[in-house]
Length: 192
Image 1 (cartoon, rainbow, N blue to C red):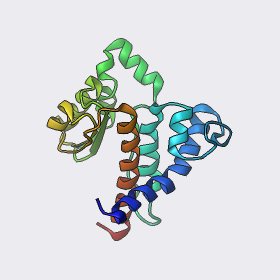
Image 2 (image 1 turned 30 degrees about the horizontal axis):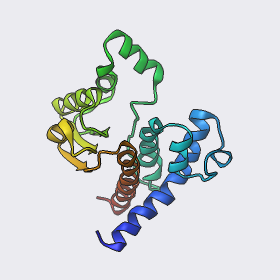
Image 3 (image 1 turned 30 degrees about the vertical axis):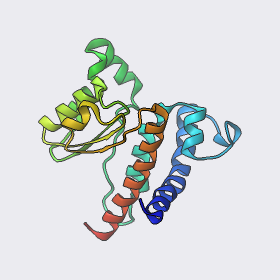
Image 4 (image 1 turned 120 degrees about the vertical axis):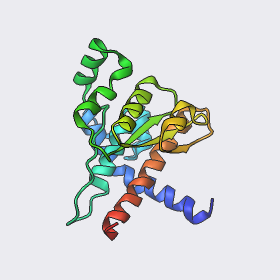
């Protein structure tokens, strides 16, 4: 990796995470991050202070809002972890492994992009959703750790980290997400 690429990743992480982390802490926990943990407004402090479960909504905020370009159509980005009532109903009535797939039944269009986040690459609920998405003509992307697992085999494209440390994998996913968001914004701005 070149120094420039490393700085780009770091810059995307630091700049992109501040507003989303602050918003996520306010919306989901009702707290001001400046008064907790390190007192910083970044994603790292958000995750230390609240929960790593807020990573998926941060991805969505950055893709839906952070990648927006004035005068251009925005990306349609939805987090399947946000609707706790629906996820609980699906888990109770159908099964936990179906909490994401069943939401996609209502939302997915052919050609959509579905991103599966899994540290191990073997999360049954993520795998079921990715299989369903591919069956319906969506493009499946995996952000994976632990060398890839099953998700690496079924996703159309994957970014696979070799680390077997959950914290490192999840933090790396946030960095990669910020980079992807910046790249999406650049492509939207250029009309591609």
